[in-house]
Length: 599
Image (cartoon, rainbow, N blue to C red; front, side, top):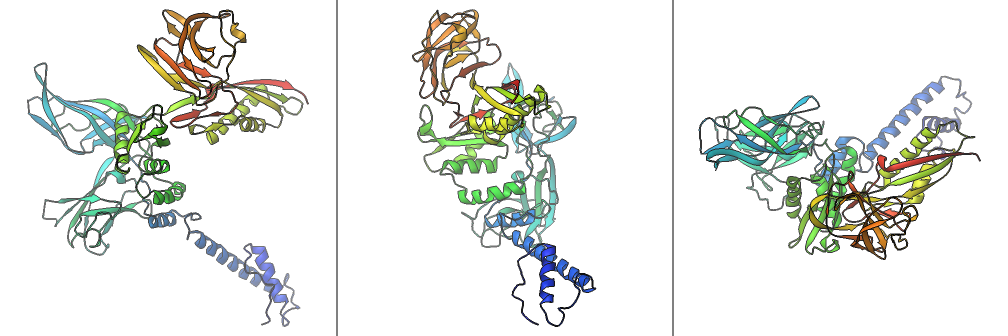
C-alpha cells in the first residue's frame, strides 16, 4: 500500500477523520476511481471513522484521568489524592454543648453517663439523634443542702450510632470497608478482640502518618474507597501490626445528616442517663459544624496544599490550610503574626475565624481549634483564635439610563444594578484582606444593562461597636486613610459639614440624640443638633487621619438607636480591610437612585 504522508493522526472530530480516510484511499492507485460519496464503501468509511473517533475520545478521557488537575471521576481524583497522603473529608455531624442535670429518686454518690448516651432535637420538623462522645461521671455536689447531679458543657454529636463486625481472615488484606457512605470518619472507634467467644477487646488508635509507628503499634488508617465509602486499613507488620486470623474487628461510627441538624437548639433525653429518666438538658451552644462530604473540586484544590503543609504550621498560609482542612465549617479565615496585632502579641499567631451559618465563634469551638493547631506549631509559638471584625460597606449608587433605548422601568434598572454590586461583592469582597475598587464596581453596574449611560457612588463604610452599660474605652481601626473637613464649631452648619467620622445617635447624659463626630484636627467630639451643633463633650477621643485609627475615651454607651454605627469617610474611593477584619457588602446597605435621560 502506498504511503500517504498527508494522513493526520491528531484530528478528533468525526468529519475530519472521515475526510482524512477518504483522501488516503483516493491516493491509492488501485481504488482511486471509486465514488466514495455514493458507493457502499461510504458506509464502511463511516464505521471506520466512528470507531476511530470513539478510540480517540476514550484515549483522551483515559489520559485526563491520569492527572489530578484533569481527572473528573471521583475514584480517579481520590486515587491521586492518596499519593499526596490526603484524606478527603467525609460528612460530619453537627455538634452542640449542653448542661445535663439528672434528678434521681435515690441519692447515689455519682452517676455514670456512658459514651453514646442519646439525646434528640427537632430541626425543620424532623427529629435528629445526638449522643455523647465520651464517658462522663456525674459527681453529686451539695447545693442548698440537697444533692445535685450536673454535667456541664458536655459535647454531643449528631448521628445514628452504628456498629459493624468483621472477621479477620486474610482475604481482605486486613482492611474492612464500612457499609454506610454517610459515615463521619472523625468519630470512628475500632476495637479488636481475639475471637467471638472472648468479651474483652483492645482499642486501636487512628493515625494519619507513620511517624513514631513501629511493627507492634495497634493502629489503623482511614482510606477512601469507591461509592463515597471509607475503609479501615491496618498495618502490615512494618508500620503497625495486623489483626490475627480469626480476630473480631468491631467498628463503631456515626451515620450523620450533614448540615441538616445545624442550629439545633433544644435537646431532650432520648433514653435516660445512667438508668435515670428524669433529665433536664440546657443548651450552652446550639449545634453547628455539620457539613457535606468533600467535593471533587475541593479535593483537587486542597490535596496539593495539604501535601505542601505536611501537618505542620510555619507560614500563615499553613495555619489557614490546616484549619480549613480539619474544620469544614470555617467560611473565612485569616492568620497573621502577633507582632502585627494592635497592640503587638509577640510569640503568638492570631487566627481570625468566621464560621458558616454562625453568629460568632463559641468558646468551646475556639478552644477546639486552638488545641488542634497548637499541636502543629513550632515550639514557643501559640495560636490564638479570635472572632473577626467587620467593615460594612454602605453605598449610595446614583445612575442614569437612556429611556430611548430601554423599555425597562426604573425599578428593574435599580434591581439589576443592585444585583451587579452584590455579584461583585461575592467575587471580590466578603472576606479577609479584601479591597473594594470603585472603578471595577461601577464597571459591573454599567454592564448590567446596555441602557445605563453612567453611574457614581457615595461611599459610607461603617463599623458597629457594642453597647455597654459599663464605663469602657474603644480602639477602632478603619484601616483606611480618612478625609478631614474643616474644624467644627457651634456655628458650623450640619448640612454642609462632612466629617471624617460620624456615628448614629445614642444616649449620653440623658440626651438620646447624642452622637460622635469628627471635630477636626484629630479630635473626636460628642454633639447633638439638627441644623447647628451643640457640643456635649469637646474631647471624647482622638482620630488619626493617616492610619484611620479612632480612640474613644472611657464612656458608657447605652440605648443606641439600633446598633451603634461608626461611619467613616475614606480619602480614596477604594476601601480595604486587613488582618482580622472582613470587608462586607450587604443588600440592605445599598441605596440606588435611578435617573432617566436620553442620549
